[in-house]
Length: 136
Image (cartoon, rainbow, N blue to C red; front, side, top):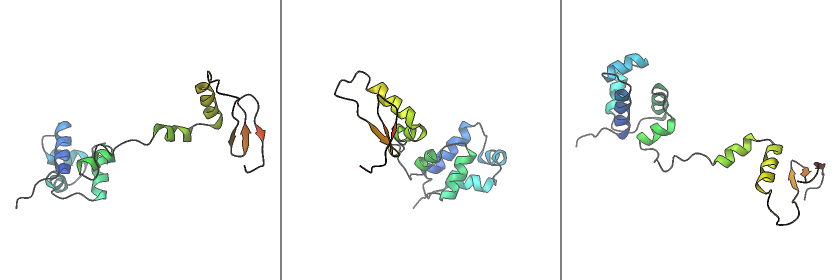
C-alpha cells in the first residue's frame, strides 16, 4: 500500500512555492527550521499534531483555521466567523447599543417606547436612565 501525502503536505508545498522558495530546504533555512523537518511536513501522510499545525501556521503567516482545513481537521464550511453581532455587541458600550436601537427603530410607530434594563439600570428611550433595585 502506497502512502499518500496528506492535504497538509500539499498545502505546505504550495506555501513554499507561493513564496518563491526553490526547495523545502531553502524554505527551511529561511524560516529557521531543520530541513529534515520541512521535508517531513511536505511528505507527511498522517495528520500533524496540534503543535506542528500551530508552528506551520506561524511560519507561513497563515491562520490556524487555514492549516486545520489543509490538514483535514476542519472543512471550509465550518470556518465561519463568530456572529458579527455577538462580537460587536461585546465591544460596544450600553449607550452605543441603545443609540443603535434608537436608530433602527426611529420610524417605528408600533407603540410606546420600551424601556431597557441594563445592569440594573432602566433606560427609557425618551428620558434619562433611572436606577432600579427590583429584580423583575
